[in-house]
Each structure stands twice: as C-alpha cells, then as structure tokens.
Length: 313
Image 1 (tube, helix red, strand yellow):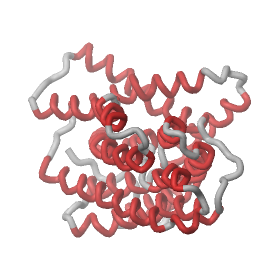
Image 2 (spheres, helix red, strand yellow; image 1 turned 30 degrees about the vertical axis):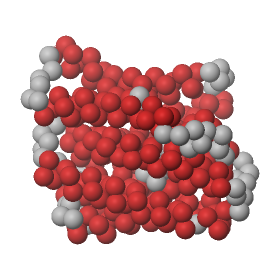
Image 3 (tube, one colour; image 1 turned 45 degrees about the horizontal axis):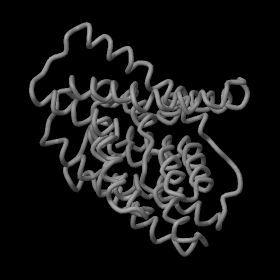
C-alpha cells in the first residue's frame, strides 16, 4: 500500500506544511497549558502517560501493523537507514562531550537525547502525510528502532549489569506490540469486526492524548553544564540525524513513502522516556528534561523545513 504525499510542491508548500504541523503541535501546547493552569492533580499526568504508553499506543501499533500490506523488500532498507542515522547521531553526540562540562554520568544522560525519538509525534505526522500506510510504516520503524535506542541509552548509564537492560526490553509495550502485530500480519491473520472496532477506538484516542502528555512533560530551567553542549545535542537530533537519513535513503534504494517516513523519524524530537530512564538510573534528569523541551519546541521549525524538503523532492 502506498499513498502519495499530501504536501504539494508549489509556491504554497511552506504554508501547507505549517498547516499540517499546526494541529499536532497545538495539542502539545494545550498539554503544557493544561498542566500549568487547569488545576488537575499532579498525579493525573503520569497516569495519563502510562495509559497511553501501556494501552492506547500499543493498540494503535498492533492495529496498524496487523492490517497493512507489508513489503519486506522495501521495509528492510528503510530499517537500515533508520538504524544508520541513529548510529550517526550517537557518534556525533559523543563527539560533543568536550563541550558539555559534565560528569561522565551527566553526559551519558544527555547523550541519549541525540538519538532517541518521540513516537507519538512521529505517528501523528506520518498519518497526516501518508494515511494508514504512513502510520503502519512509522509504527514498524519506531518499534524496530526502540530496542536499539534502549540498548544504546541504558548501556551508557548502566551500573548494574545487563539484567536491567534485558528486563526493560522484554517488557517494553511498543516492542511487544510491534512484534505481535508483525507476526499476526505475516501469519495471514484477520481481525473480527468487533475486535477491530474496539482497537480502532483505542487507537483514535492514543495520538491526541499522547501529544497532550508530551506538552505536560515540558520543563524549563538551568541546563547545568555549558549551554553550547546542550545546543549541540539538540542540533544533532533535529538537523544532523535527519540529514544523515536524507543522504543515506537514495543510496540504499529507499524512496517514496519509505523515504518520507525515515526522514520524519530521524527529525523527531527527543522522547520523554529519556527523562524517565535518566531518573531511574541516577542520571541528570534536569538536563535531560531541558533537552526534551528544547527539541520538542525546536522541532516546530525544523520539522517544517524537513517536510517542505520532502514536498519538493
């Protein structure tokens, strides 16, 4: 299944791109406003994020992957570009350590923000750009990349051996939903209509609530260390990683929908799960929260530019 890009390559392309992004980033802004002004108990937002992460978003991924017409020959090169762009971001982020002025653990905490990605935003934009096929492709790409991102991030900060890493991977709901959805699809399974409608209702709620949770998680304050180091990590994530994907895609035969999806994937802001991991492992949670907020807001402009480039290509 392939749906042509929704963005026109004409003089109004930039404005069309802005309109494409506006609803999703408006939800993020609304989440930030609600967190600060709605008077909801602080415990509401972690509960909402858990609902999205453990129930709604896995339902969306499974449903998208279970129904899409998969082309393994086209999908594997897309996965290769995604993994290679993540590896490039890891190396480029590592090169910025002298700029940070942090302890090794503080730097390791922030380095993960150079290559981790916000799946909620990716799914929302992929759906706008390529419909159901875009959601399925982005879901598969993110699901396959989650273990690699977790391995890299946890390994950087691990002080308690590999047991914790393996436990986090096998319990990750996005990884499990991806594996189950792909297995169901490749086995030729079909969903009964009531079950499909049930999952569709969960999936419909996932993106809006996920983006609200992203907005509620935005945090500002002193970055700690040197500002230039944090800005370098943000530039790697929003500019250099998608540049690597853009350059690699045609060289590995990735074009059309798959190229669009892998470039969007690489251009996504850092994931809020980076903050959770940093806090769990005794890292620099405050600095990571700043980077997540900075890349999320910065992505309004950089994602606009990348989508405009996709429309012109």
